[in-house]
Length: 505
Image (cartoon, rainbow, N blue to C red):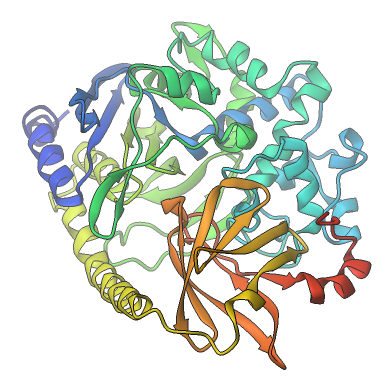
């Protein structure tokens, strides 16, 4: 390690992190750095809970969300190596009931397709139904057949959580163990990850677990912990940097930990093969990046002439990052308990640049300034919408006509009720999330979701001949980029016969 690296990591990292946490309003953060087979940094900053002033330490739990995918991808690569399955087997070999929207895609879809985000779905498509819902994992998989893909099969990368859930649920079919048990037995226990779990209640009841936070109307606010156990193989691991540093040590030692081969080296290599182009780079900030591909639970890209493997994770109130560079024998983990920051990514890059002797520049400041104009515009636009909503305008037709049952071919049933002079939306699979509607003109309502991660969105109704035909429903892009048309029941009776929608009664 050069003097400049020592200077930043040993002397400047704490100052940098504390300063940038204030910039981004991040309550708590944890960092682990592994270098040359040793854990050189493993610590927490700020608060796991602002009100109680509970500090973050190396063992504080975070929902690591999609960082879970690397565990599932590695598990499937191991089972392939052990000949218990083949990554190129058809999914229907294990799940005869499995369906995608197109029959030809169902027939072609392999386990590898599920793990590499190439089944035709758009990024996050379907998560409006799945994320934080009361659906079982099987019900989420069944929903894939009702999800009309935005791209042709194997044509374009589209980040698909349901694909990973499906792949993970093949594990109990071939091993007799649930995904949760298999992951614990195969990874958590051999690596000594004693503070890591896949269970919502364990996370909720752990005294050293983070409270999730977000920025809402410009203020940092706490949120309830979201139950994402049903997302299991794609997102449900809860962990800490002390435990996850062991996962990185194993990755950087070819599958070995403390001299024991935990994961076969061939399986490690399988997870790192480029399977799908995930992004094209043309970045002034990172000119040494030329490609980005997806493997089995890992993104990969080139950086300063070296190959990097990484993954991010985002859950309600958490964004997290894992990156490692075998050529530099370096790994970095950054966890935060706010979902409204890019510091988690900037800090990981800052540490990597220190070890690669890149001249210092404040990446966090660049990220912040780059996104600030957009955030300011969004805040201004929202303030204008809230002002219009406060005028309590009256729609062209009576509020009573908006009441009733609404149906969407993917989601199913949603109800709109008139309560105390105000319309509220109730979603059948998300009983804790209510959409409060305020009229803002032109047949549009401003919807404020009680689950604040879903955001505040403008939802237009289609009205024909004085009757409500449908509503166009949207949630925050953080959950799902797509729009979902819900047909008013009077209209959906006709559609139901074609699509076999569930009877709302």
